[in-house]
Amino acid sequence: MYLRTLNSLEDAGTLMVSSRELAAPLGLNPAQVRKDIAYFGEFGRRGVGYNVARLRDHLAEILGMKTRRMVGIVGAGGHLGHALALHKGFEKRNFKVVALFDKDPRVIGQVLGENAIQHISELSETVKRLNIEILMLAVPATELNSVFDYILLSGITAVLNFAPVRLPSTDEICVHNVDLAVELEYLTFHLDRNSVVT
Image 1 (tube, rainbow, N blue to C red):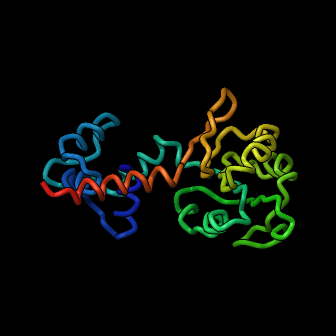
Image 2: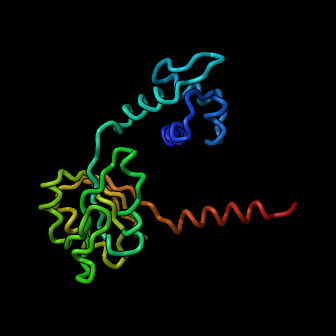
């Protein structure tokens, strides 16, 4: 969250930021921000604040974001897959989408951005050839099991799953599940809670 906020500040041309300014968009208090950042070293000066670029670079290094990570998208032929494939923000954060996959013959060969959609059967070879480290899954729930078999065979160790079915991590693969319906339910709860009149 700190890195995302610092990226936004840097994009806006902000050179220095106080702990109060850094805390506000995150819903934290300034003392917590100072404590968290101090854990990694001395970066700010009392009364002056933090140098945005320096702190951003240091946090990026701690999180392993200084290394460019190659990414593939499975399910690139669908709406979400298209959106992910064409998203411009990944490169600025050191993620490079280098391959797209699907199993629908109607979309194989279609070019999105710099990449043509390949058949899922080419996943293992392409992962090795392009040093892909992360796969994003944007497939329907009904296709998840068959697609995951290809992923297991590819040697991939990191998966970001947008399918509406939770995939467990294993000793070999770290899976991060993003269920958009759950996120919408959270917002609905927030809306309902704020609309209650006492």
